[in-house]
Image (cartoon, rainbow, N blue to C red; front, side, top):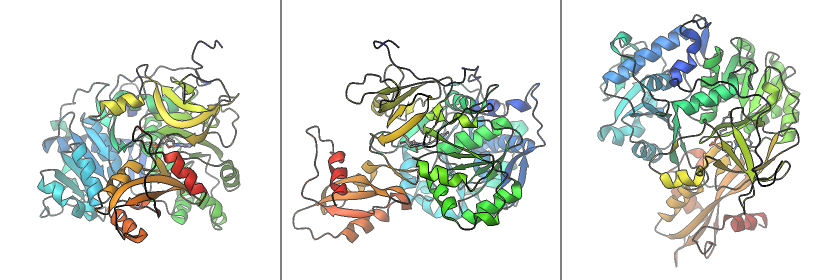
Length: 547
Ligand code: AYL
């Protein structure tokens, strides 16, 4: 390797042809078009909450009906629809319908508070929100501002027409539309299809514009080719309790499962015994997890009461999985192979364990995978920006068609994240070993990860500073056994203020979803800052360790 050139890492799998000129839903259901080999009478979705089954035929017809219904309500190509739903078949159908129409889904956590929802709905200019009856109370202001609210009944019986006296359109109106009314819309590969919110390496949450081309590429990198990196097949039953509003479940689970003809078993939330019962009942073959779920399996004395022998893949992602946890959970799943995926909302999947390939490679526990195919990766020195060889830690950068198009209305943040040569800077510190496996060792960026969920320090700092008795504030991560990291605040009170820790906590914590709640408050005189005005977070984290 020549030192004057970049050290670039590639997958061990060869590049493949990726049909990323296709609109997302054409690509996902390609097996059912023309001379495809798909059997549309097979199971696509199992509703874990009710046992209801939707075949591939059901899913496609419902997708087109809902698209027609949304179109009749005035949603057009490029318009934004917010999905504010727990994991459910309706989430999947709504996402597909919006994509089919050439519109954009902005996905949000249904547990968000009213102000958190309003912020995202306004920033994304959502014209419609698809939600559940029990959540509409949080949307009153948006409704009054003219946002259309489409509502599912809470009991899940959405074949029955319900009264619309609350000013909401019933979801049933969408599923009962006549799909022959809608001409298939024209979609360009560069059109945005999904817009989850992420704070990326710095600042407030931003709309991540993911295109049809980007998502198709990301899915194909995992599940396409003669030797797919992630070998999902039509015989698989893939469990999905990870939140579908997040890119991990959306891309790596829901859409990847549908591309391969597998069955997706959708579960509204993680509840250990229910999940084990479902694994046994449906002979689940793939269990995607995040590290806290791994801990729950390890700690449970009840795993032996269930037959978990059908599981052949356990795949962890979204946060660091310690080697000891991975080794311990292996014992509970006798027939499963283990490995990680590593990714970022802005980049799709960056790495995937090659233990999951159709013709698998030997891998090490603790590694978060090997860079996916049809992509490039490098590790750069954080001071000089120069690329580093194997076994040297630096910032992980990735390049390929799977990356986001950019942040909505934020060209500066986009340019800070994707450089002029097309490299996305992840803000993660790691290295590539002699076997092409990636190890993440640290995080350069501000982001705090509570059980894999994003907590943006800037968002909490803005709330803190809005308090009349707070002059300045900084939020950093503190290590935690269960959640991995929790947000804690350093606060500079205004002169003479008697503000207490509890005052600060209750002021912030009622405004945010549970995992953003501040766990501890430390009062200090001044927040340490660089001359540029940037908070010296490293100094604060160092301070925490001495306390
Ligand atoms: P976001 N190990 C360590 N840290 C990780 C890992 C991992 N396996 N995966 C994600 N992270 C951290 O946007 C890392 O700091 O998306 C990364 O920059 O919520 C940040 O989480 C991104 O957080 C997949 C598999 C996506 C996993 C994902 C994770 C998406 C998390 C697609 O196929």
